[in-house]
Image (tube, rainbow, N blue to C red):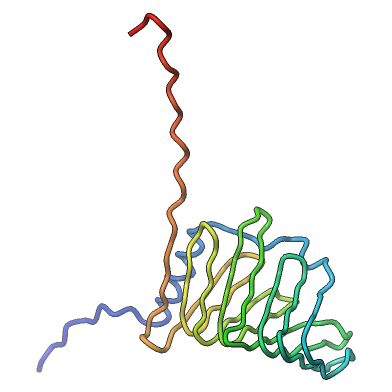
Length: 188
């Protein structure tokens, strides 16, 4: 009987856990808390639909959706309304689609993917297809699918292509060294 050496390859579940732990170690960067209280502005070249309970409207051509500091752009957007005719979800596709948002400290998060599914109620963005997310001063992640919580900055990721989620962690900047005072005249 032949014994095979134990593989040291990390499985997909462990990779996701490492990604989440690593991004949590970067530090929290909560989305701007006032964004949800702002009106959602929508622009596109074409609109098809209406705002009624449990309906979906379609926007096409140079789609831009803004709510406070949250901005999403793409080629096509499907806007889903809940039973109270409130926007509960927006799915944006593009080549690529983009999302960005400032946190309460003014740090910018940017993301890009073939598709961005943003749940306005849960404040979760699922970026699928060539997904990347960058957090200014914190780092970056890329993979086939990245799920980003805009409230807590928690992220999970998975990848199919090369089987890896790629991450870059930025070191925390060191405080500037204090300058020592110049010696007084006549003293060495």
